[in-house]
Image (cartoon, rainbow over all chains, first blue to last red; front, side, top):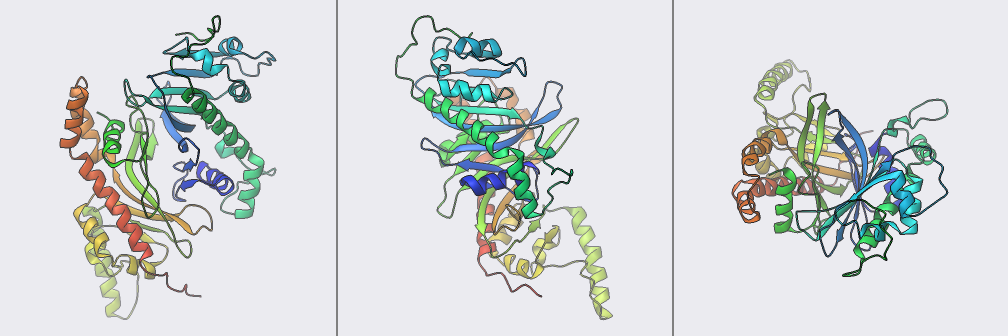
Length: 212
Length: 226
């Protein structure tokens, strides 16, 4: 099943505003209704380090913050690492973290649910950046490589094709729903937590997990 | 200035929720609320390869039809005009000897079909769709624009109606020109945006998407032949 087909079934379950065409495979967009503004789910073609294009799943929300803020929490450095410890320091060991405000960043990343969601998706990364230089309006996005989307075939290796019952079954077995739910919740938690920073707040001394 | 920045300024004028950053390039997207249903303006990768990608600018809305339907009215092309002339000649010749070839249909709108390629799943319904005067006038005024209608999913009555234009023609030239002005301040950039014709082009694309939506919903779909 391609991106558009998978997103179609996700939309049928979760609702929202779905824009896709059966003519295309990867251009589907889904806007999920959220209390603080819609979440956009899409699959983007982006250039990699070698210049070759690859596909990324992106969940994007808007956030309003009192000051311009940049943050990137990159994907985990070592895949398959079993680590029972949690906390901002442990997160910064597993992932490269860069931000424009290292004093504030640990406040955002100390959210236990956000840490849990990041641990569950070692290949995903989180990014916050203003719309324009100096702007208070920000984009919060969670991204992940979309390399396994074409591999949704049944146990006999048959692709879903346009057969609706088969597509529905393959969608249920593919884990797409669970993956999207996790990524959406991660973006939403980051957005809500970042938007709720109290004015002038600074985290307690000693919580300096990020690096500038 | 990039697509993202153009679209950012467009969002400041027309409202809606803008998804994109100034530092991004062509992935910016605008979600517009409309009384007839929401609209999305974005770019779409049409083809990609080792040396880059080709994109089109898209204005998309949705409609509910009675059954799955597809329509594509391609951009004007002199090559297509030549092909259609030949196919039309063959068609007329065949009719003179009492045969039907179906090589070239004009769908009752020869001014559109003469130099555009029209592909559809239901020719009879398409004849009605292309009777829309507004749609025909907008397509005539914008030779590079094209329209596409297709279901959003399998066996689905909800359809996506898209108006598109290739960004090769519309934006890349300006990207090169405005690359010289990257140091401009906000006011100067805003002025460049207003003067460059981008808002007019995007308004025309939005208008075409709305006209296509109205055209496919103006008439009930005819009974499907058994």
